Length: 171
Image (cartoon, rainbow, N blue to C red; front, side, top):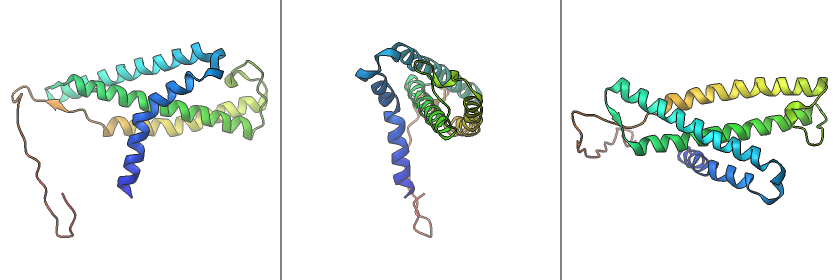
């Protein structure tokens, strides 16, 4: 069961940037396309910057260097994380604006809607978004550790080893 959940989450991270770009390029979204493309590009820039900082900090702590492929992998992973958080933002905004029946003005972003209900829906949406996204981001940053190369052993070879525990679980 855990392996199936892992595969679902992994495939979500793989397709998240592609799905975001496909949603932006749909034909009926021409009016807001340039703003959404700018947001998508900024997510890639921020994802790359996060990857550089995390990889360089990890290499500095371990007194080694990070391979370029690991930095690119982390940039894609960070961008996927930001895309998923953007989907969460959009979903929560739509949920709270519909729950509080806040009217949306034509041509105006939901975050700029006026009225007490819209203001309350916006504040509540931001609180829920921060309470979900901050632990999620801290967990993602804490769990991912890029592979680093030790400068004293640049081409160390290794061999995969498997052990069976007494209860039959492979280690």
